[in-house]
Length: 313
Image (cartoon, rainbow, N blue to C red):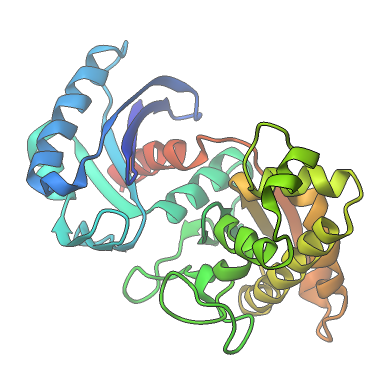
């Protein structure tokens, strides 16, 4: 069987068809245009589903939707999507009615977690894993004993909003000191901007033709720039503080890192592991394995696979 994974982004919505092994069959995109409202979006999504179905050798059996924000997975309602400015929007039932396919929806980080569990960890029975998506912000999903963990309201896994610095930097969520405000790409660049006033010169020196972003900081680190070294070391330390709390809470077999910032893992992992070494309760830190995925389609593949999983019950 194949499933359709749908990633609803603020600018574009991506559709990806994958088989049960995670092999990609087809990919397409269309503008999200959230300002036109959910009804208009669902109508255009149904047309995109019909189009991609026609490109597949076998018709897909299910749809999985990954959406950034607060999701009610049982009722299929997108309670709040800050990038879309939608509140309490039912999606799964209208999409099922419009496409004729079984549909399930999760937070996008949960879908990435399921993709990591299947693609990176091989569906290990009894596995417990924490998956961190390190992009603009920090998302996370939790796999416990081989199943996606939702918590009481479907909100479990908001690791990006763990407090790592009391009264610290303002996060986009409105709270201060969140992990995301220090280790998401926006947070990293904000910290870097405080100590690198002449950003144009910094770009010219380390990433000509580029922009002031984490990639520029990785190039500066590789050139031995002390400021960049400190920024990445601090990133690892903040990440270590947040992840250490999660390890003590869940005692996972694996931590899986994914997303654009995770590509710089060789720059920040050493200081993150130093935090682990300083923990007084050492057993879970000696057990846990750190893995990283460079699969850019992990979330979309996870959505397609989770839709099939949900279809089977």
